[in-house]
Structures are given as structure tokens and as C-alpha cells.
Image (cartoon, rainbow, N blue to C red; front, side, top):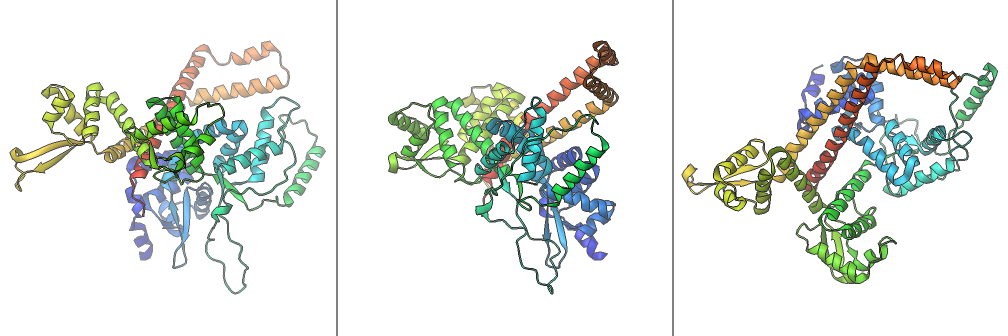
Length: 551
């Protein structure tokens, strides 16, 4: 027992680094998507760090079977990882950052829709909903879902869904999951307590050759089948399922890093478009598209590209000459924001996109706009001045910003108390006497970004709690509305008369209908706010990650 206590009190470093706001948000996300038991296990692991099964059962007070099932769900969705320790037991660790990604699921799904239409959207949605799936299972499910939405008589072909899946794999938006390596079993050696999963990087995006022939099926809405027919159907299904699919054991998951790379690239392109013009942004977009698969998501800049290569890769609709392109590239390279850098003169000039510098510019622009929203345009002027000049005394701030001394002092103290600016003391003498000390105001961008990120997590948690409260308050009305809709749907299916349908509709009174409209409007507003805050979270997180020194 003493050993168990020692484990329990040893907090994992990652658990210590998590802020209360992050832990609370993780807890709310797990509760909303997976229910109470999974939330309890997930939050416990986030708070305490790496733990073995016995301690998890002991400390959470849940049944062993419940804990095992909850861990299976969390592992299936990549929210928990496991590791075999030297002493032979298995420890489980929650991936807090991965739990926070649940917040971005709608954005991943919407991006897949814009890039690969409804089929791409449903493939990504199914993979996110199920964590990991085989390609054949995804294709069947998506084809069935698309067939449901089509007009009668039309169906979705498996081959069409397969083609979209292959395109998603080719562009690295979906990837294979690590597998258990095939090793010949020796009878004398006992199996390890947990399998070690491996994947060869070359195989991560290779799609298995499947000859999936078939079309999507519709669900039967009415119980029109005869019992005998249903039995025959069930036997047929049983017969089908007994034979494993050709890609059995090859599971796929969404490549979240690739989506983040896409979001980052979009942010850089729109920033260039706002700063310069559409043509400049199209040139940068082309450079980023050429580097998509060759540049890692954490790289500080893209691979160098020659002016000639960029010219050949420009979209067909852009009729700009080579000379004009070179002028644009020179302009971009000379811009003080340094989104594009020149790395050599061969091939008409070698150019790279400075990803880390671009992320720093995007984060700084976010900070500036937040300061302007919170404190007004004159505070934003001081803030921008400090960003440009790095260190300034109060008197210098007043002079440069052309703001009266009293107002400048108030504004600086306001931003100082909110941690947007910091004060650095530089003493002339060792005694630190105030009269012989320089007090310099400065902006520590990474520290301010961390502080804002913490506030963003708090905001999203508050929004989620507000949505839950709104829904709980109107629970009775929502249930009544759902019941009425279900009755209407079944009556329409059986061909009921208009007067009968009207009578059912009138079960919800005018004030109730108005209340439902208000609830819908409020929930939509909260959902939109969550998405907007997450966009800010993405910019700040990407910038903070880019400042971390990698070994």
C-alpha cells in the first residue's frame, strides 16, 4: 500500500504545468463528449499525471470494469497514452493538449468540406467521432450517410468515397495509426503486458488497395419488413461479418498537425493580402502549397524555392510575367515584417517563407487588437510604440506618443496591472535607490501571449457553462418540442391530413415558440463565440510553440 501512496503523491511534470483553466476546460469537454465516467477518469489523470490501473481504480472509487472501458474510450480517441514500465506494470497518461483539440473539431470538419466537399467532410467527421477506423468501414458509413440525404432512387457509390479518402491521405489530412508489429510467437516467452505500437513513416499515408464495390444503403424508417424477411436479412449480415475485410487491422485517424499547418498557412496568406495585395498573397500561397508536404509543422521556415519554380507553380489563372513575379518577390523580401526571406541567388533567386516570424507577427497583431478593444486607441498607440522601440522610460512614452503626462501614466499603469506591459528596473548604483534607477517599460510578447491564452481558456469554459445552463433551464420545453417534431414526422410519413398536422403544431403555444427562438439564437451566439475564441487560441498557441527551443 505504501508503494501505491508514493505513486499517488508523485505528480507528473505535465500535470504541474497545466493551469486550472485548462484542467476545467478539459473536464467540460470530456463531460460533453463522453459522459461522466470518462470525464472523471480523464480529469483525474490530467490532475495527477501518469498512473497505473490499480491506483486509478483506488482513487476514483469506480468499478474496475468502468475504469477499463473509460480508458479504452480515451485511448481510442488518442486522449490517453500508455507505457510499460521497467517493473512490468502499465501506466496511463492523459494528453491534455489533445483533449483541448476537441474544441477545434467543427473547424477541422468545415475545412474538409471546403477542400473536399461533403464526402471529405463526412470522412473527417466519422474519423473524429470514432477516433480510429478502417478505410472500408469509413467508406461504407459515409456512402450510407450520403445516400440518406439524396433523392429517392439515387445512391452514393463506394468508389467515389474511396477516391476522396485517397486524396485526403495523399495530402496527409488522414494518416495510418501505429500497429502491433508482426512477430513470431514463441511458446516459452509470455506476451508483454501491453503491446508496443510502431509505424514506418513511409507507410503513414499509403492507402491499402481495396476493391470496394457497392453503393450506400438507406435505413428503413418503417417496420414494413415481415419477420421472415428480417431474419433472412440478419443471417445474411452475419454471414458477411464473419469474413474480415481486406484492410482488417489497418486503422486510420485524422492528422491534426496537418490541419493546423493548413490554418497557419491560411492565416499567413490573409495577413499578406491585408498588408499588400491579392497577387502577393497568391504568390505566398503558391510557395506554401509547394512546401506543404516537404516542410515539417515545427520548421522555422519552408524549404528554399527558386523564382523559376514558383513561376511554374503559379495557378493557371494568374497571368503575371516572370519579371513582375521577381518584383513582387523582392518587395515581399524587403518588407519589414519579413514574411518572405531571400536565401540565395541561384535559379533566379531562392526564397523561403519565414513561418516563425509570420506567427510572431500574427500573435503581435492579435495582442494589439485586444489592447485596442479593452483600453482604447490611445493605449494601443502606446502599446505599438513599445513594440517598435522595445524599451522606453515614461517621459519618452509621453513624448513619442504625444499624450499628456497624466493620461500616459494612467494608461501605462492600467496595461501594467493587466500584464500587457512589464516594467524593467536598471539601477545605476548597487543600492537600487529610486532616484538613481531607470524604469523602462517594455512588452514581453511571449509572456503576454501566455497570459491571454490562459484568459481564452477561461472564456471558453465560461461559454460552455453558459450554454449548459441555457439548455438546462429550457429542458422541459426542448423535450416537448422534440416530441412534437417526432409526432409530426411520423404522421407525415403515414400521409396525415393538413388539419391534423396543424393541430399537433398548435401543441406548442406562441410564447413557447418565442422562447425556443430566443434559446436557439443564444446558443448559436455562444457557439460562434467559442469558434472565434478558438481561432485566437490557435494563433497564440502556434506562436508560443514556435518560441520553444527544440533540442
